[in-house]
Length: 246
Image 1 (cartoon, rainbow, N blue to C red):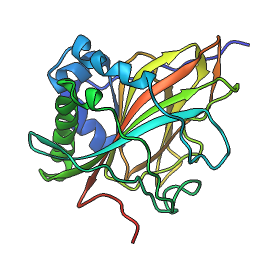
Image 2: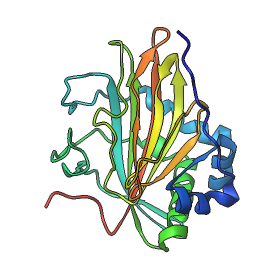
Image 3: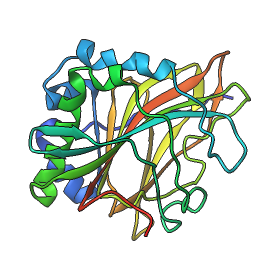
Image 4: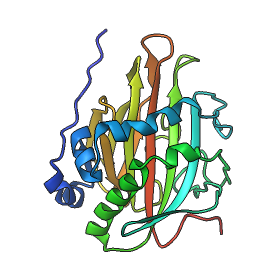
């Protein structure tokens, strides 16, 4: 049986703010991502080796071993990107019914990944988009490297299902998609039945989400050959501070 892959409609960079304000999400092509971050694909792809050395996520409550990840936190304001001391990732149950309420201390993102010149450019560029919608301010950014693999037959990018992250904006950058089927991105309006679905296929395609207005999920992946996996960089932007356990 053939698998239908729906290609996303890319938003032209000059229309990005209007698209986010009117629809709650936008998808940028790799060339637009480079333009946004004032870089090129060679510089952007320099972060990719960091996905080849991710430890297994030890906190999956479904018992799976299909997710590898690392995590780091930053404060981004104007053109300053400041990494803060390593901290646990925490979400309330309200936003993550499966893994909320846990202090999840993941291994930190490797220093040589963060040291790539494109890293601060990317975070600053997305923060500027957030500024354009909610005003210039410090953004509390959590960076998550994910590899979802199919060694055991199936991998779940969002085992918690359709969800919000409890932040202001979410950016999902596809790093690699190799020898898999599935992995469809689904975006739904938080207050209606409106929804869109599409598959991120080309590396360095970027999905931006207004987390207050939409919920999102990614469907499971299955291998089409040995070694199938899907790599993403997920960046969350939150005003006022990081999510912390009260």
